[in-house]
Amino acid sequence: MKGVVSASLAGAVAGFLAALGVVGGTVSGPHGGGLTDVSLLAVAAAREPGAATIGDSTAPAPAQQVPTDPQELDVAYADISLKLLKLDLQKMTDLQARVRGSITASQFDRVDGQVRVAEEYLRLTRQGKGTRGAHNVLRAREALRNAEFVWKTAQQVKVAANAISDIELARLRMVIEVERVMVVRAEAAAAKNSMIDDLAWENDQMRDEVQRLRYRFEALTARR
Image (cartoon, rainbow, N blue to C red):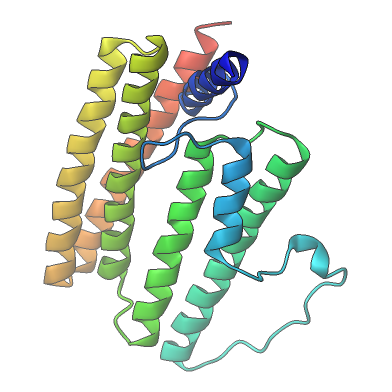
């Protein structure tokens, strides 16, 4: 039993560090419990019972006629985008099944969150409410939820193995505050129904993503 606990702890530490661009592994789940390789597959299977796997079709799907009505075109785009994200999620699950530890819980959670956003956006689009601002609000709220998940995971790793510095914890906590502000800004832009405000939000969101990617890249290369 002691050996099993040690292995799980090592996996949790390695997985969180992988989310920061350091090493690979498995981390704990979004609700505080351990999220192992096996439970990752269970989560994916539970999301969509009876869902077809990638290998169910050996021939490319026939080309579908693209609608010309603007509303129908928006629905078709939202629908195909959701299907693509679900295949991305299935691909990650398939890779995890073949190569244990290849996908971390944080990586899986990120794509799973994108699927949730796409599902809700498709629902809004079918109701004629799928505006650019509405989509940005969904993205902002999901980014906040993901930031909170990463911070809580870091806290768990800190307590369990003291593998995360206090500065890193403070930085991750500040990311949450940034995402909270971004949610308010996205909601304000959506309320105005202003494309300029929507584009301003998207530009700032993209800039923040680039900065975070740069941080992760520099953290990785600094160890070489």
